[in-house]
Image (cartoon, rainbow, N blue to C red; front, side):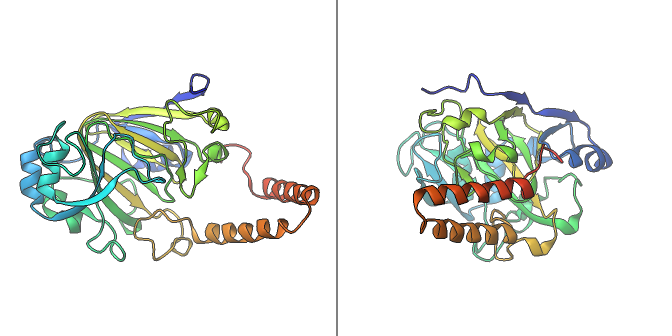
Length: 321
């Protein structure tokens, strides 16, 4: 049995010509995803349409990419390869439907999530990794510059679908060229997402296996389509799944909206759980291990007591606060 027919769906709200003050005072506090349209994002909106221009400006810098034989990428089971290509060659191939040169097949798909020069120590920043291209894009001043964390250059082949996941920082996805379908789920639907770390095990969100993932049907879908020039605000902890409806270029900008000491200072990708949350998870793992020492009926009883205490002390009654 596979269907999302009964799943509640909400269209992501669209705002046009948003000022900094409007975003900060009216949109941001609601902690809901929105599509922002009509912003001035610079000359990239026109010049990045040309793969020749992109290749010339980006040059032959080697970039590490995902190469997938199928459009639907699975990070948990790794149904793709990591390979490297000169940036100019990646742009050319990602814009093609069929390739004369390839790693797996002539219809393989490409995805770039740019990283720092040393991914273990350097944070992705388009100004550092692609300075000539960075000159073409204007990032809207929706957050204080001193809270900036990263700006991630992204390139997607037509049809690429990324796995559903969450990030611990607020961010905006600036869709420069091409279009994307986005589906998001509230953090309060976490119990329905079948999480493996920060990723959902439900790979096909449009045709899920409800025998394997029966509670996924209870998660509410927030849906929208990003056109070239649109900006998607993704509040921290919102699950998101993205399909490239055509070859496209995007820049994803993350910022720290919480105190610095809550973030893992060794996290170059910005996707590690906050340090108090990581400690809580470790404590819970030890608690569950301790409960395993009990007979089944006692284990069930004390597990229910733990769940009740967490629900009473920690869970919000509604979203947003």
